[in-house]
Length: 429
Image (cartoon, rainbow, N blue to C red):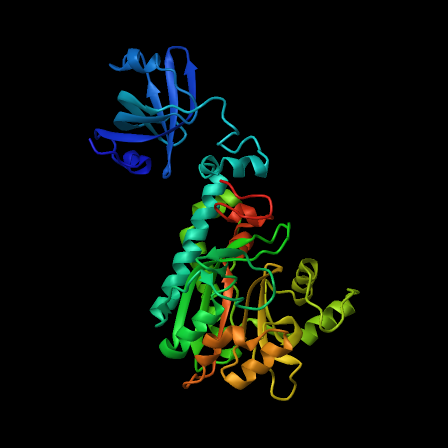
């Protein structure tokens, strides 16, 4: 008999079915045995009474939490059981037993340390809270892909092994590549640009690596980015795409993740568009007026991003027109003020979740900006050459998947929102 999900079995009252899953708990009350079985769709109580033909075999089974079992029987209506349905078994087969004791309580009723849960991540995925986090993340991903695909963007697959830094700096992981040295990509930036100047509108979902020695609740050394790049566009054009994409993703979570949001105690509000656009200079002046120590040209700290959110009074807003010193070499300078570039950050829930720029599409200006950043244009020959054969103006942005998931689910540590986090201390599992 083919196995059916527990929630489906509940609807097929009186029909012989097979269910399978993990034992959540076992309780004996007199001669009656109650087994609560769980799969990814839900839980059901299996009730074994003396009059049941399979009573002797099932009542003698030594079942522990997280044992995996298969049960043949039928669901029946019940006025006693809280769910209104219980399962009457005909047979129970143990598929695999769990080691005892468990490293932590999978029900989530007893809290466990984050490190313990990450050490046994496969088991942590079974807890209601962690399961809800990654179901929300799944909806964010599928909504991102659907929104852009429906609007004519082509999904691309840039390489993850590169010959030189994508954005400059030294925060790259080196690796041997035959008889030379290569790096893990810190960004798909250069490749999505090279695609956009031919395909016009592209997007990608890709892992990136940064060898920064951070150990904070908002940083990892491997993350997933959701990027777009668009030709015949400037920074304002793609800011409009970004706010529409975010609103669509949040709307999808609000519509499709009601159960998960209840588990997480979250209520998602989709922001009204257009989002407020604050210049970098205005943001600095707001912070200075609130007594924050910051000078023009500084980056914002995480606490200052939260303060800005309170001062602006909106859950999501843009900070645009950044100092050139704070952005990568490929950011297009303002014509009237080369100290400023056409760059923006999107602040959502008090944290930066996305950044973007209008890119430089002229080879001569690219070489000039590379030199200003202390980089050798000779190491970017293939990249620069791609703009020598009719490259249109273009712009793009990137959303950090784990960062966005963190804000949406209300988590305080980004490691909660990465299936198998990689940081300075964690390389396994």
